[in-house]
Image (cartoon, rainbow, N blue to C red; front, side):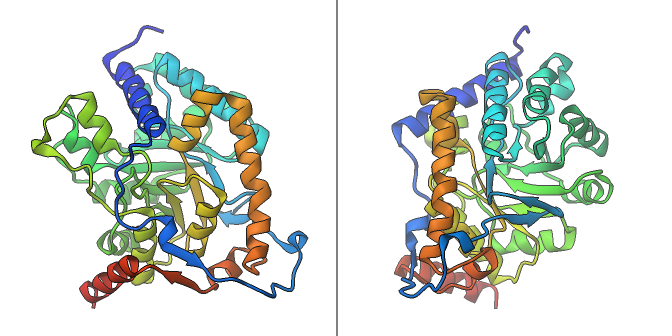
Length: 351
């Protein structure tokens, strides 16, 4: 497949993103998972075998409360990685999202880099991916391309503004309302690493998507990636912009959000998954951390990592005396003073 400029951009995103994870040069944004402390459950009165870590979303029961998040597709290299991730997802019984399929709508030859996911994970729960400005016709095409069970419509103002060739107009709400009403599969509205505030959750309450992916900070930072890719000067530096995953989940609580939440952004362990579920997420997902493992150590290592998470989750639930996600969300926790300050300020702002 001959590579276009957009396909080359996919490869640049991949290379820069993985290198940031390798270098562990993450810009810390706000509260981290370590700012939420679990309280000991001295007498759990249960066994590990009593735990059910499955979760229900979109009227579908997922065996595990995490999936492989959207990352790649659109070029020869990223297509191969998509195929490998799909094989890992099949082996570990996980759902999987693909990267933005907009390139495949413009360049039909690129569609195979996404279709490969369904070929390699024929019975899996797959999530399509497009930007929030795409019309319903494109949404249907993206869904059909991989026989998707759901679709993520990503919102990425910060990323676009850093990109030299990015969008400069963002009128999305009417289009999203149409897509939510007409999509043949459940629609997830997803941030891409900058998190969501109470204002966003109030807006989404009116739209009514099937789920909200908070896409919080402290994972893959596309502001940094795009600035490095385009060698942008520091005059437009928004590396520290946004809310973390923890802050986004707590923001949803402050406005009594009732739409199911997916926690993405910096999840690197089973402990991070547990904390996210405790703070109100129905499902979680990991992208950059899994991608780095795949790129540096291969599929077997990534499968081993995922299986270690799957082994740890029931034990962590038992540690906290929680037989399921509903029970886990009722468990007390302690917040660090910095996180308490965030909660206090946001409460006052929403009075």
